[in-house]
Length: 318
Image (cartoon, rainbow, N blue to C red; front, side, top):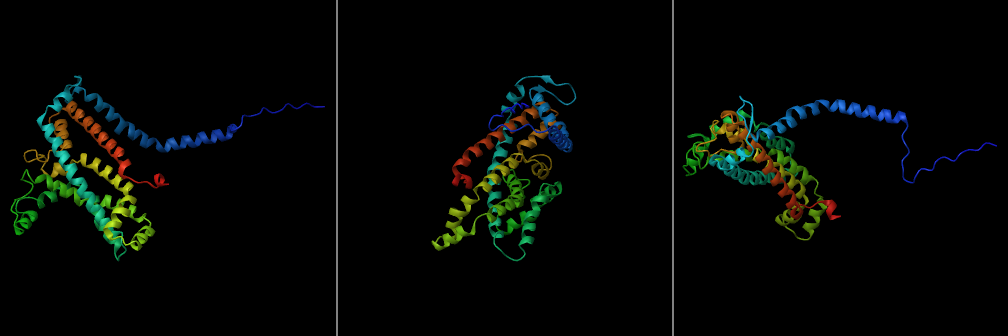
């Protein structure tokens, strides 16, 4: 009579160990995945993470690109907060963000509402409205914009016909910032496409029920459209706010690399560029860069905190 030992009882819920062949195959798949990701990982470490860590160190040093950095502690930050031009750059940037972002999103939402309705040539209209977002950040468009808003140019002549003689906006410290705002608004195509995608997800049954109840277009927009697309609206507000804080190319080109006149277009990144590459104060510029990172992070945190009060998700409704 042969005695057979009972197999060890495995605790309930414990998964059996995979065979060696399966573990080997999974290891090979992971290795292949990391191999395909290696170019991105190398680029991230060398071109993003590495420079970020270096700039964090330079922010606490005196570094002019030509001599070894010298540790100075918080001197760069102290000098920065007391710098009148730095304060001016913060004011200009905040004005730009507060004015350009809402106007751009309002225009994007308005056009998206029009394009959400079925009409002939809809694809052509969408492509035409989206095109400025593809070319708006180019240097050539900045030169064109500068020509449009110069003295005796198209905008100047048009406003004279309308009885508003303010001259060219480029040379006027009171109006040049609004030329940059106009350029930002003109590039409303990207948020428009996102709004359009959100509008397509709103169930038609809600509008039909509201019409039966006698709700007008404005009430349907306020009580149905806005709550249903509030996640998309939040995403666009967050994205466009971050982009507005980082504006550089348009301000630099439109102002003919002077960020003026009278520092009227001295946005934060423009002053950062001047300190880092024109005045060779890389330590000061690094301190400015990390201050901007912290400021954008705080704005992002505030937006995420505020979304609880005005953003509606389907999961929460369920």
